Length: 271
Ligand SMILES: NC(=O)c1ccc[n+]([C@@H]2O[C@H](COP(=O)([O-])OP(=O)(O)OC[C@H]3O[C@@H](n4cnc5c(N)ncnc54)[C@H](O)[C@@H]3O)[C@@H](O)[C@H]2O)c1
Figure 1 (cartoon, rainbow, N blue to C red):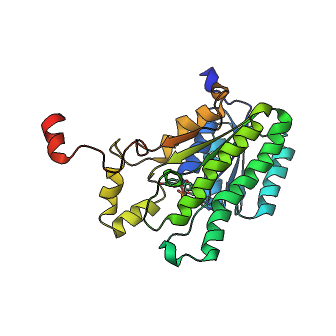
Figure 2: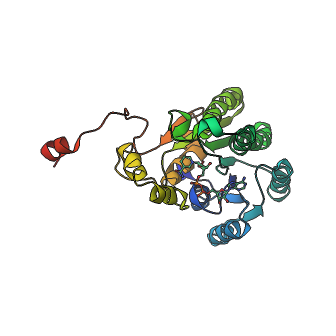
Figure 3: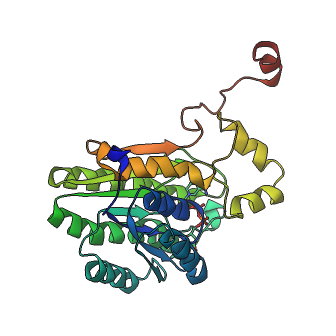
């Protein structure tokens, strides 16, 4: 559909070797965009680039660690040289340290904020400067439901960092909206894919039920759940959409912790 068409647009996406980053990049390619792919997993990133270039898109994979500023500088120099413009930024990569709040070290906090906040902000700056000159651009960052409500389960620093991603989105969108640059955030709930979540659930038999209790939709997320949302936010059909924090969460944030039907009531009333 024309209103979701991204033909001729250039998208920079991080975390593209797997998971939601790969799904987002795939969606942009399917909608017509050319791409620059960032991931420290060079083999996985190259594999994604190979798949997407088969669609007829120009795709440049650049392996590296998003916490290294000179790597991000190099990526945007390549964008300037190879394309001369950047229209879409998808901030997906980044990981966190987890553990009991009382045991976390300052280094754990710094590493987590560097991965999830500072690196995302630096990518926003480098893309944003170019987009502001163009008078147009769409930036989206992955946050988490953990940035809005507390998981209360060794994820304190992660939640603090994701709350910063949400506020970064509001600040940048407000500062840049009048000059044509839109900035939004997507907040996933538990999304399968890389195997990390599956492993954690294997190690803790109660975790699967606990997660599903918080997902009224009745299933975990899949990386592909991000595809339609990402294309919409990137496209001109979302021209008046900026500063929004969109849950991608199977209904998680809408639900009160004690909410939901109890099993005997479901059996009685829900056919
Ligand atoms: N999966 C979930 O349930 C979930 C829920 C909410 C938020 N998130 C957030 O969404 C983002 C993506 O999650 P996912 O499940 O798709 O991840 P994933 O683990 O499947 O993939 C992440 C990709 O990013 C790359 N990466 C990680 N750190 C990097 C770094 N410093 N430099 C370069 N590449 C790096 C990895 O190599 C990998 O290819 C993460 O920030 C995560 O915290 C995930």
